[in-house]
Amino acid sequence: MHETPAPQTLAEVTAMEAWRFDPLCIAEDDPKVDAPSHRPDKFRIKMLMRDGERRRETELLIQKRYAWRGYGQLGSMDEPNQLTMNAELFGRVYATLTVNVDSPAGLALDSTYGAEAARLRAQGRKLCEFGRFAIDPSARSKRLIASLFNLLYIYSARVKGCTDILIEINPRHRDFYERMLEFRQLGEERMCERVKAPALLMHISCARIEQRMKEIGGRWRELPDEKSIYKFAFTPEEELEMIERLRN
Image (cartoon, rainbow, N blue to C red):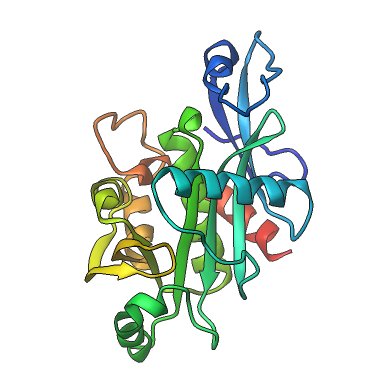
């Protein structure tokens, strides 16, 4: 699944054949993609820098996908202890996911689920929040989603020492997070004032992710009917390489 990445690229994930992918990229305001037709190409997963064209493009993807779902505007991407991973192909951002590591400033979800987060903190847990997940409809891929989540798990758990991952989702997406990512509901449905939409608080421990990766990681060919994306996990050797690159 994964090969030695190019400089500044943390991971590469094979895309669909270009001749199949190209027509799917055309939307009302999108340029035609100049894609090679003689070989499969790869999504390149990179950390988002603090400024530049990729940052503006990432914001636009998030705004478009959230607006399509009927959500309100999110706040700034300049929150403390934040890291964003993007998947790029043909010079364009197709998917993005952000993690915020808990700090004295708290997490965005505290405004809706502060009591639940406080109970975990009181147990000595170090929390992080995954959010701003957006993916272009033409690029939906379990392997791509798995790589984004896997990289942010490595950063959160292995580099920053987090023990638990929280995510605030729309209730209609609950099945996806339970079935594919094995999150479990932690808080009752409430209104999230940040995006003006109903929300559920979902949770998974980093220990649970580690256990599942040991059980099924790298076995996606053997387990075609397995729904969990942890079967696409990086190998232990690849994970060690990612840790070193994320620490630098």
